[in-house]
Amino acid sequence: MKSGNMRRLVAVVVLLTLLCAVMTAVQSVLAAAEGGDMEPVRMGMALLGAGIAIGGAGLGAGVGLGTASAAIVGVVAEKPEMFGRSLLYIVFIEAIAIYGLVVSFMLMMTH
Image 1 (cartoon, rainbow, N blue to C red):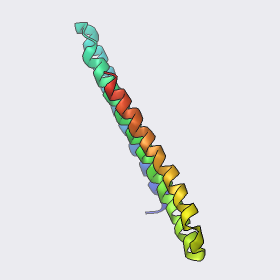
Image 2 (cartoon, helix red, strand yellow; image 1 turned 60 degrees about the vertical axis):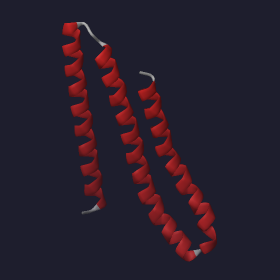
Image 3 (cartoon, rainbow, N blue to C red; image 1 turned 45 degrees about the vertical axis):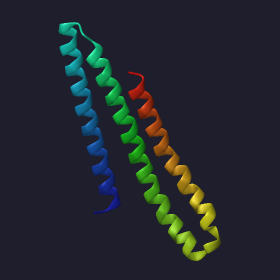
Image 4 (tube, rainbow, N blue to C red; image 1 turned 135 degrees about the vertical axis):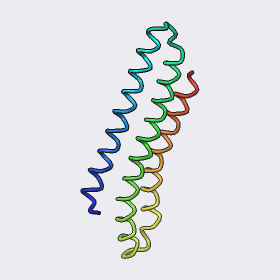
């Protein structure tokens, strides 16, 4: 599959996932509004936000690692002395995924 088609497929899957999450959230808010108990809704929204945070960070880090790794392999094949500097770029990309993990833990622990 070509990379353009793969990116469109990933975008469609992400949008459909977010749409399903929003529809579920609206349904739970409406159900809780009838009963007056909003505590399960707050917990559900926090967990939904945590899932979106780690999912988005993981997806972004995965795409970044895929493109950067391909370029780094080409650079290291031509100039092996660039390996250390190239490894630093990978560490920065992985930090994005760790930030998403930290945010998701913060959202889960607030409730």
